[in-house]
Amino acid sequence: MLALQSHAINRGDMTNDNTGQQNPWGQPAEPNPWGQPQPQPPQPGQQPVQPHEGQSTSPAAQQPNPHQGQPAAPQPTYPPQQPNAASQPSHPQATPAVPALPVQQPASPTAAPQFGQQSQPTPPGAHQGAASYPQQAPPVAGPSMGQPAGGAGYPPQPPTAAYPAGAPSTPPAPRKKKSLVPWIAGGTAVLLLGIGGAVAFGVGSSAHAPELEVKAYLDALKKGDVSGAFEVSDTKVEKTDLLLTKKAYADVDDRITRYTLGDVSVEGDTATVTASITQAGEKYDQEFTLVKQGKDAVFFDNWQLESPPLSSIAVGINAPDDAVVEVAGVDISELKKDDGVYTLRVLPGTYPIALGGESDWYSAEEVSASVVGFGVEAEAAEAPTLEIALTEEGTTAATDAVNAWLDACVASTDLAPAGCPFWATNSEGYELSNFTWTVTRPTFTIGEFADGTWPVSTDTDGSAQAGADARDPLTGATGPIATDSFPFDVDGYVEAFGEDGATFVYVP
Image (cartoon, rainbow, N blue to C red):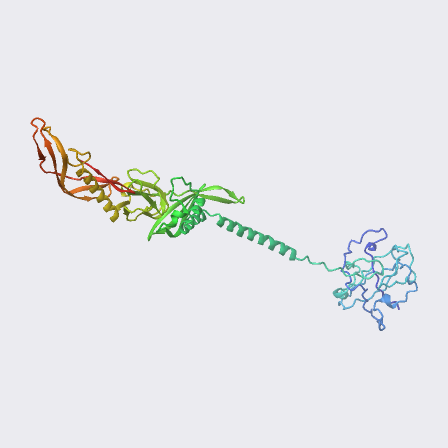
C-alpha cells in the first residue's frame, strides 16, 4: 500500500505543462507558521502512521533517507483528488495516484540540510525529463484541511508559498509597529514652544504697555523722586526751575498719594492714558500722552511719555530788597520779580513760602502756594504774599530813627535846617545870635512795610518856635526875638535797617 507523502512545491515549479508557463489558477497560500510540513489525513483503508516518541509526525520524518546530505531529488506530483459529490467528508477520499515525472528542479550541490529539514527519497519509477502533470496543491494547515482537493471541474486549491524543497517554512517576522513616542514628544515640544512663545509674547507685550510708563512716572512722584520722574517723562529743566529738585520736593506737602490707571487708547504712534489721581484730599482725572520710540526685541513697541505740562506758582513778597525769600527751603531771592511777584514752575503739591536768613528787625509769617494737578498756570493777582513785619526791635529802631532825625532838626542853628519839618525867616535883616529851636514833639506811627519801606505817619502834630538874640543894623538896637509857634509833622518812612539801626526819610 502506498503511503501519501507531503511535498513542498516550489512556486517557480507551478506550471501546467512542460512549457514552463505559470499556473493561471495558482494563488499564493499562507505559509506554514510552524515551519514544519503538515501531515495528510489517512485515506480510506489506510492505517495512519503512528509517530514514535520524539519522532516528527511529518511523512518525511518517518521515511529513512539513504541520501542524507545529498541534494534532494525532484518530487513527483499527484493530480488533485476528486470531491465526493454525495457528501463532503471531513477528509477527502484518496484517488489512485498517477505517477508523473517530476518537474526538474535545480539543486544546489553544496546545499547542506538545514535544521528541521528532511531529505525526501526519490520515488521508484521517477524519470527525469518526462512530461509533468499538474501538481497537487500541498495541504494547507487549518480549515483548508477539510476542503476537497482540486480536481477535474473544480478550480485547483491555492498553492502555498513556494519554498525550496525540504526547507522549513519560516513564519514571517511580525511587523514592528512604529513608536508614536517620538511623534508625540515632537508634537508636545512644538506645542510647548508655541505656548511658551505665545506666553512670552504676551508677557513681552505686557511689559511694554504704554500705561507702565505713566505708572513709573506717578510712582516716582509719590516717592518724591523728581529726577526719576523726569527721566521717565523726558522733562527738560532750566536754570530758573529752582523748585524742580528732589530737595525742594521733599519739603512739599499735599503731594500725590494714590492713583488709578484708567482707559488706554492707541492711535498710530500715539497712546493716551487716563489716570484718576488723589491729591490733598481731592480727586481729578489727568490725561497723559505717549509716543512710540522704536522697537524692543523687534516685536515690542517702546513708548516714551511726553512731559506732562508743569504747573506754576506765583509768590508775592513784601519785604526789603535785601530780604531772603525761601520757597520749600530754596532761596529764590536772586530771581527776577515782576511787580514784586516771583513765578516758578512746580510739580503738584503745596509749597511753603518763608523769609530766609536771620533778621533782628523784621519777620514774616509763613504762607504757602498750592497747585493741584498738571498744567495749572498761576495768576499773579492771586499770588500769596509774604508780608514783612517789624519785630519789637525793628519797631524800636524805626521809632529811634524818627526821633533821631527830629533831634537833629531841633539841634540845628539854622533858620531852615535841611530836611527838617520846620523853618523860620528873617525878613527884617536882623543880626541873629544864639539861635534855637524850641519844639513840642509830635506823635507818630510806623506802618506796615509797603513799596520797600515802612511808612511813618504823624498822629499828633508837633510845634516849633525859633528864637535868637537880634541886633538891628540900622538902629543898633539889640534884644531877643522869637517866632510864633507853628505846627509840624514827621511824615516819612523808614527805608532800611543796618548795623547802626534804621534810616528815616522825611517827606514834606
